[in-house]
Length: 194
Image (tube, rainbow, N blue to C red; front, side, top):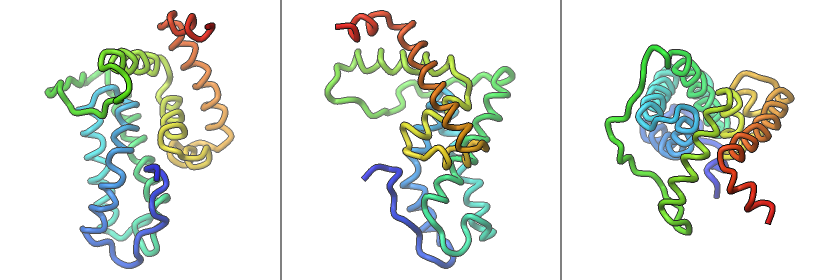
């Protein structure tokens, strides 16, 4: 089961700390992946994720939507991604003022077992560099739709746009990402011709 195919809902009634913690546990990796794709720095992504989870707990404690009554887990996930997206955009706007630098260069990441380590690192760096050429809302659309399995309508709810606008942005972002990636990696163009 993919991370975006979670259980349909949480039990009705008050959201206990145990239920809340279990929900956040299921959302942690996908949210970190999304934030890491947006900010390029694992430390900053972890800070943004922690801020998002703290905001979620404050809302849950007030029993305010979407943490009230009958909870649809997909709706809760959209809410988390929405809050994380807006916190990220705010952080990116202030990036000129604050420069984030990791204090832990050896942050554990999942590796691809089939590819040699060097190839995996080079590929990740090339993709990350290509993503930096896109506007943050474009990166968000790509990550939300491709990596996290949200629909264009759900991604629109997260970033505050219509489904049609997200679909257009997604289409243009895919094309732009491909152009930038191939311009940075001419060997891939040759490999694709073979």
